[in-house]
Structure formats: structure tokens, C-alpha cells
Image (cartoon, rainbow, N blue to C red; front, side, top):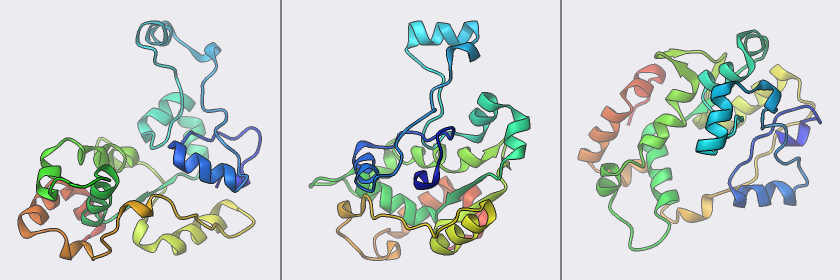
Length: 204
């Protein structure tokens, strides 16, 4: 979407390998994501000096934080949306993204780590506040092209959105997630992401 952004729009940085793709396509890069010092409170300056923490928008930022940064009035004026994905499929995708090199841990061992919790921070916790969905629409990754087209029309983007392929080279195993996840791990993932499964009716 950065292809259609203008000088005043906020574009957050993404991982360097994806920034390379964005640059190769000659799309706009990160801009306006750092808040000016004029918006800082005493606490913000404390965090900057002692914790090296700058007030900014960032990739996968939570709705709660966006509202804190820009205010409820502006938040309510915008059409807000995000994407969610089948948790079993998403977990397998994260597994191959985090465990790029052989020998890999088993998926069971991966589930024992803290890594799967990032999917909560970059998923359910992004679009909910106190377990209430606060964005206008949660699009489903399984219907990606249809969702993107509906969103494009809704916000008035003049051309179809075409997504470049990224991160796909790390997953050589192209089997369906049902053929990768065993029964015990299926239940563990189901318990871990029970709220998402209930909210969107996902089935293994």
C-alpha cells in the first residue's frame, strides 16, 4: 500500500529483507512514524533518555497504542482494518520463519518456547482492547485477494493491490498444516488460540 501513500502519510519500517523488496519496486519507504518531540510528556522524555525508547508507530502496532498516539477522534474518523489467519496454519508458518536452519526443533519443542506468543501480540492483541474487537473489519488471510479488493474499493485506492512474494523461501515443506501438526500439538494450538478460533469459527 505504500505505493499509494503521499508525503503526509505514516509508513512504518518493516524487516530489512522486505524493505529491499519495497525499494526494488520503487515504493515509498518508512516515513512520519516517529512522533515529534513537541508531543512528548515528561515520562516520554524519561523513556527516551534512560530507556532509549522513542514514541513512534511501528509494524504490528496495537490498536490501543495507536489510539494513545493519535487520539480517539482521529481513530474514529479512519476506516480501520487488519488481517487474521488460521492459527494452525499461522503457527506452522512462524515455525519455518523462526527455524530457518537444519536441524530444526520439533513443532512440539517450538510450542514450548515463547515464540508462539508473538502471534498473540501481532494478532488478537492488535485488533482488540479488553477482548473487544475495535477495528472496523478483521479480514481473513484465507480470503486475501478478495479482502484486499474489498478494502481497496472501500478506501478509494485507484488500482488493484498486488502483493510481492516475501518470506516464502524458508518453508520448503509445502504439505497442508494438517499433515504437519500432530494431534497433541493440534490441541495445544487450539487452546493457545481459543479466542481467535471461537471468534472466526476456524476449524482444524
